[in-house]
Image 1 (cartoon, rainbow, N blue to C red):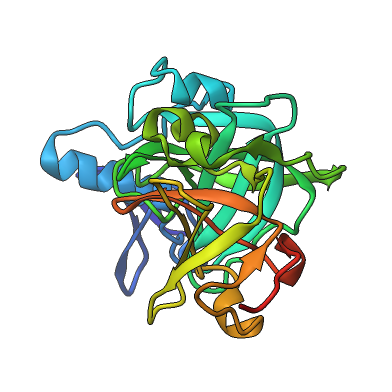
Image 2: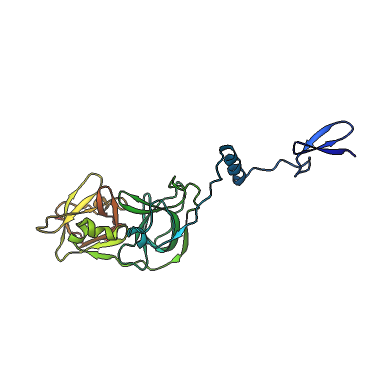
Length: 268
């Protein structure tokens, strides 16, 4: 049997034919231990002299708190009791089940291959609160470099009834201060007279107004291209339009989700 001596933190086992260094926590025949993210972070911290990066704990808030400016942008938040009202090309629209205003949140996609929640899903989201061109967002992990280790996620908690649309007239929809209270919430544009198709752009965006009105409301094709699908024409009329109220640098635009969100169209 060989004998052992300690040298520089290693146990050297001495036999009659060879000296073989062996890690003090493993047998010589065992494979080397696999590095984990924790050990990698610790080693990196040792090299830089900084503490390992630790994901912050999420702050439980309501959607209204974000709208009211009670939460600092960049905070990792957790919001429950949201219902998914629309699936867009780059994320989902959700709103507080119990709020009639200031309850909308846009949740960007978590990246390629991520499975978005379904319409009418009740969800709990953990992510980073952001304001992008005025739009209130909660970004899960992978969509924000601000908290790279945040364990953001979307948890589905069963299906619930879809919320009733907020009813707005043309004045309420085109006033930025009034419309901001309903961003990312489902809004229905109503009028006592027919709504008129005022113009159609090449990208599918179209505008609507009423007789002798000085303002027009914009309708977006980001979810459903109603102008193409329904063969809308300038001068045509319809009864109402509804969908989530999208906000970006171009202002506020209704985003119908399907043909059922555009009612009573009549060609000119």
